[in-house]
Amino acid sequence: MGIIRNTEDYMPRLIDREVGRYLRSFGAVCIEGPKWCGKSWTAAFHAKSEILISDPDNNFQNRVLAELSPSLVLDGAVPRLIDEWQEVPALWDAVRFEVDKRGRKGQFILTGSATPQRKGIMHSGAGRIGRLRMRPMSLYESGDSSGLVSLKDICDGTAPAVLTEKAELKKLIRLTTRGGWPGNLNAAPEDALLLPGSYIDAILSDDIGRVDSIKRSNIKLRLLLRSLARNESTTATIRLLKNDIREKDGEDIDPETVSAYLDIFDRLFLIDNQPPFSNRLRSGVRVKQTEKRHLSDPSLACALLGATNEKLLGDLETFGFLFEALCERDLKIYAESLGARLYHYQDYAGNEIDAVIEFPDGNWCAAEIKLGANKIDEAAENLVRIRNLIAKGDDRPPAALCVVCGMSDAAYKRADGVYVVPITALKP
Image (spheres, helix red, strand yellow):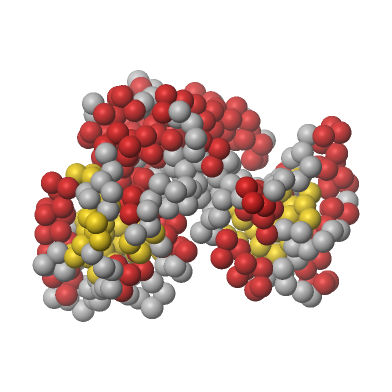
């Protein structure tokens, strides 16, 4: 039985265009990302045949066959999907060798929810296997954003003013706790945290041990995950995470252990940090080089904190950080679909920009994220002030300024040139 029984059931993803482009450019494409984000469905939609390495039928016959002779599982109509290839790392070299032998583009699609150790892999696959990062669904992909306003148009300065449906606070909270998991889109509000909670349990009980076969303390792993959830959308350092665990949970973890655990979380695509933006801001202002911390979906932070819809409704300070994470998840997806990258800006003079979208030509857009419409003026003033500061130096100032908000009923350009757009009206 194939992954997709009927292609009409497939929900299009923004990464579809990139998959097609990579298949035209490389002999194989590897789609990587967190479990349950839809990688297998997307890969199967683009594939003509498939083999599922983690299929339990006949005592994991496919995995056994791949281990005995990796080349045997490569035969089939192309593009051929090899799902969860990391279960048999030797498949990477087998695919690379087969691509070289055939000398054709678009032969294989690999999917992986973990990055295995390089041990046993002889070649990086550079030039043969293109890698794509897939994330949970954005609000536009899940149908929860009207898409009336384009991020590209905002960055180009051509976005029109439009009236939008005002998103209620309860709806924004529900979208955050539900997350962008395709299997959770129709979950009842009271059941929204069940899937992300199960995700965390599966990672801790099974996936981490399978990455490198090293036994680790599940208690300390969960403590670190809870600390990451408490520090969602902040630039918390390793030392701060360590101190947070000691102060909040009464346990102590060595900084080297924290670093090692973070590396494991990264290899499982459990974290998706936002790098600092500095390459265009090199004048007299010292720029901090710390990443903004994010779990791969804000619903994971909600599950780790036990942050139900009701609790978040009574704790808007916490929800503010989670809402920022929701917006930055979507902005990252939208930016990458446009060939851009998402960063954040923070300097030692106390200036901060929540999100920076940089395009390959060096043009960039600065965005602040605010839950309530009452914070739009403050956010816009901050953006204009930092833009003027940058313009005084030799660095390129942002081509556009934008406030992404939650509870607003219009998208428009202010008199000071700052765009305002609700996250529930945004698309690439």
